[in-house]
Length: 169
Image (tube, rainbow, N blue to C red):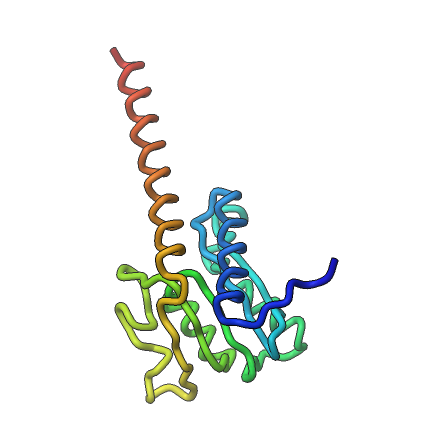
């Protein structure tokens, strides 16, 4: 069948959204990421923290690991990252250390975002590498996916609490 023909930034973000859906199917927070070099996806990942009980298994980290394997190098200088949620401090550090060229993220993360929301790590001139940042690509779709996921979790918890309380009567 071959790889889909992606040409536009929105196409790559849709690939990241597909990764996020994979995370959601596993009960993970639906965040997905892809890394692109010369118009080809060379790394992809989605959250896997719960499945493997590993705090560092964020979508961006897994995509970076796969891209490094594909290139046989830790340097991803001519590569761009597309991710459905603004990267956190850990992922921003990995982005800088990997020397990624550009980051496209969809939804801001006001509680943990380290690109624009809480910190501006990718553009900090005190660091040895800066990254071009594009925010808001398919933001509404990605924000809705996350809101829906957390709404479902809250409803399940509320239902479980009601069942427990009924059992105590």
